[in-house]
Image 1 (cartoon, rainbow, N blue to C red):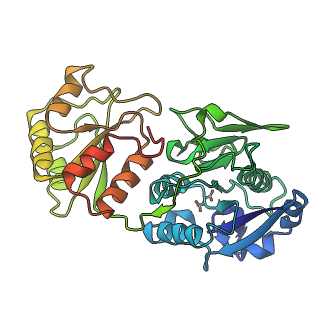
Image 2: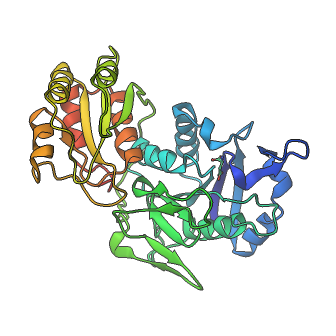
Image 3: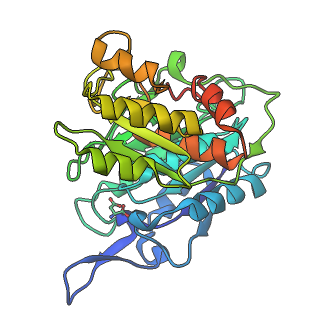
Length: 339
Ligand code: ASP
């Protein structure tokens, strides 16, 4: 029997309706989990760790990511794989963060959750949980994990964690990886696309990066964005990194003030990474003049990264204590399939 550690952090999957307010609130997951019996029928040996109290994922912060990474590291040798139950709202941030914090990972870490609580008759939580367990315990034919990376299973797709985005607030099919194919599809069988899954590397050693530096912002451009607002953000003294959300293939207004502000911030050591506001596609700054001037001002291309991946990657690199030049260099290299 494969041993899987189930880590329950909170989220809708374990919530109940408050009879007075009608709002969903976290409850003790044990009360909603008779279905662990069904999991046992899959011949999986499950142990459970719970966050106390359970949290709505909008309350997640880097201290929770650290706790998750530490739980995984402390139990790494005892378990074949890990399943994390997590609220959907920030699941893509957590999956991205963990992919960078768990360097050298060679075991499955599958995040899942649900849009309806597990106690509701139409819940999507039961299938999500059971399939995530099955994926976390799947072998490749040589006894090694089939999916030795951080992933999100939701509805019928397994996605690379640091390629995923929550794309619907109410559909059961709530996550999309716009720029990378699914790692697996779940129908009658679970069909793995091994071409897209990171290879199992027997010599990998897990190395933790627990410090995440949050002196970063996401700056989303819009037509008519005022100079003083951009100046205000870029002149925050402790600012270390910016995810700049631009138009199309990485374009921005050609205002001189914007160029000057970006150039000054880059020269001061602020790392600015260009990510498109489009759901799909990649940044190609030399395609138009409106992108080229950003490159000339020192802005880096984030290629086809998600905002979640670019942001958490910078947090980890600055958390490692790297210099701006070193962060710039590493932002241009894919560390674990994030672009
Ligand atoms: N607000 C919830 C959360 O992210 C939503 C969910 O779990 O789907 O925790």
